[in-house]
Image 1 (cartoon, helix red, strand yellow):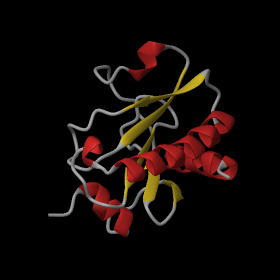
Image 2 (cartoon, one colour; image 1 turned 90 degrees about the vertical axis):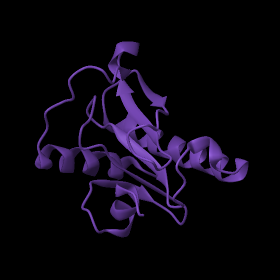
Image 3 (cartoon, one colour; image 1 turned 60 degrees about the vertical axis):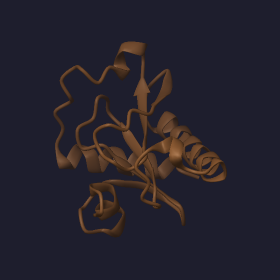
Image 4 (cartoon, helix red, strand yellow; image 1 turned 120 degrees about the horizontal axis):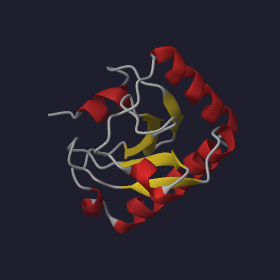
Length: 131
């Protein structure tokens, strides 16, 4: 059964896309913990990130690095935090989160309230910096 991320990648579910190549897809989280919170997923549907073969995982990190560099240019932050949790959707993914301090990465807090328009504007800013 296709995951929600596979449906997003195929265009069956709309998203605020940041970047895409033959193997990976990056898009804004619709329930962000911070402005610019982005998910990076492989197009290959694999449940657990550490089940990806080493070469694919390495390329996924390189893709995530390019996205993170664009986020850092587009959004005022000290760093881009990276976390892998992987419990909420059975499709390997990385969270890239603009942060000022470690606690900005805490997923137990209430998620940000944001509009589709705000997400679209944030995605546009990050895409403009993606190279």
